[in-house]
Amino acid sequence: MTLGEKIRNAREDMDLLQSDMAKLIPMNQSNYSKIERDIQEPNIEQLRRICQILKLDPRYLLEIGELDFISASDMKLLNDIKIFIENHK
Image: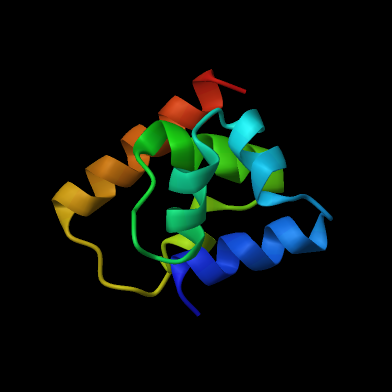
């Protein structure tokens, strides 16, 4: 399942429209639609808001498991994302 499909499924499970999500992030509805269709990737702030709104773990969206091989630079990025999310709850 792609990033966009995971986001779309979670949004639909919460009975939210794309326009609702776009307002909550905030971003343009057209660009949000592109994220769900895997045409555009969310930036870090948009990803953070999507995870907050839909109560999703970023590791699930990014398909990062505990047993996956992660480089040191990827691990640093993940740690920075974790700190960023924790500081903006």
